[in-house]
Length: 64
Image 1 (cartoon, rainbow, N blue to C red):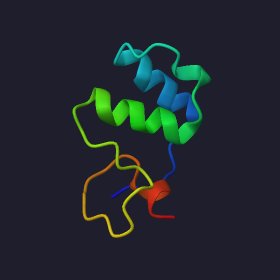
Image 2: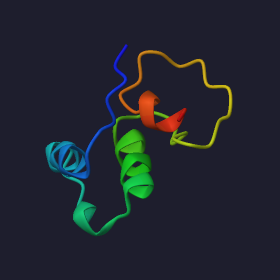
Image 3: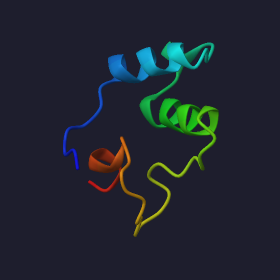
């Protein structure tokens, strides 16, 4: 499991792969939510206190 926080640059690159428009203008949490939705997942980042989802790319930052 990774403990490295994901950077905004990494997030915008991932958003580009998913063809999300306007990603660079979003704040980090909003961008993560948009990516989660585009991937077909629940936009749960920083919304669940006792998350059991693993593996998760955002877990290190979400559960901090």
